[in-house]
Image (cartoon, one colour):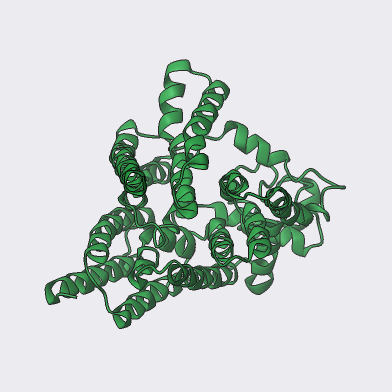
Length: 433
């Protein structure tokens, strides 16, 4: 590693640390500090990614920078979330379960739960007109977090920290299995998105990423049943991994293997509902959310602005996603390569793309260090303007200029990468023939 590049990388990491330190020490409105640091750290991350990709980094430096990423995560373990109030729903669901009550039965303000009310919850629970949308595995994690620390954040965040450590370990194993440079793990370890969205704002998706990466690792390691179990469990946090099923289904040649691809993940996903399904409907609020919510979806917003019909716009986006997804199912790209592009397509066509959803793409960067993903992870920080306006003025509003700045570079790079992949594939075919 050249001395100039080494100095730049160290300085960039120090600037990243300094920015996150400001969250702890600045006394101005937390959301203002949060917004400035989120955007600036994300821009620095794009530069750090350039340094990582363009330079050889000795293993001892990789270990040191990973340690920095872990310390940044640890620093937020007792800090209350700033950019999101989802945590209060997690806390509430955990408290309800700790009282021995089915979390899918009641609205937060139902009189039957009055004895559980405190000064914090369910007062700060968002969307109190809905029952919980979270699946049972998530509910058990909420229960574990509440059992550790009650209405304090550290118990649940400790579980998230452990989950992030498992993610880093699983990524390291997958990188080694694929014979990739160890330095690529820094694309996740130093990425501001998981640090802010999981370690600070405590979003649930942090529990799904290690399940997904372990599923990918075990599949590459030819432990397919174990892989499919972990894949099914990842659906319990967020069903992003469903994209992998058709890819695997058509990848396998034997009929018995195809059957396993379909049923093992669905069984692993379905067993968790047994304690609840006969006394409540765990999918009730989830379907309401899936049917109506929208945020930061570029294609959906464009279509909906023309036809002015939420449901029709969703159907059109779904059709377009399938049309664009199918070529990746049947092409000759590397199996995991297909999955990276499929997740990116899902984000482009989805009606709802909160920044923590993009973490499902960010966690793939150490395996597929693509600039489309790096820019998407960095530029998604611009969505914080909506959160800033909401917390300061009480108005939840999307900005077309933010959508354009976020997505136009990503889609342009994505198209360039696809053209490059296609040319490389055609060249390889020509060489073989």
